[in-house]
Amino acid sequence: MSGSLQQYFARSTRKAHDDLLSAFHNLPEDKRGWSPMGDARTALDQLAEIAILNGSTADLILTKAFMSNFSMEEYERNKAELAQNWDQLKETLEVNTAKVIEAISNAPDSDLAVEVSMPWGTMTISQIISYPFWNMCYHEGQINYIASMLGRLK
Image (cartoon, rainbow, N blue to C red; front, side):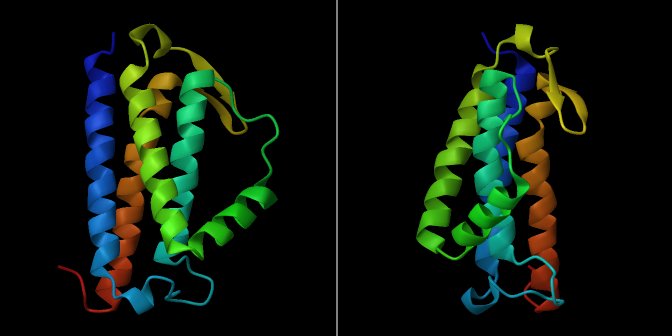
């Protein structure tokens, strides 16, 4: 039932996940929670964001509705807690990445033009299925920038 756009983003999301983890593992362990400038985001914080958002994006693709009870404060708290526990973070990232890849792969062509009301405007399902890929690529760059500051960029 899935069209080529869905398969493209499912494969691209998997590769972006693998590339992101490669960049993360390139950082020395003692620098994964390091903030390069005061309140700049750490690599762990960025992975926690992705772990959470891959799950909520999967739900969004399936339900075609933004979470009506979304709380930014709760999201920030959950992200901070997740960033403190590598085993839980890694498991959540793996589970939610698999979940979003499945949701992307199984999105019917007929859903691609469906518009979802978001707090910042409407987005189509075809735009939403591209988000996990884009977000992981973006954060791979951020983590590679941290690596470059440490002289670890390969």
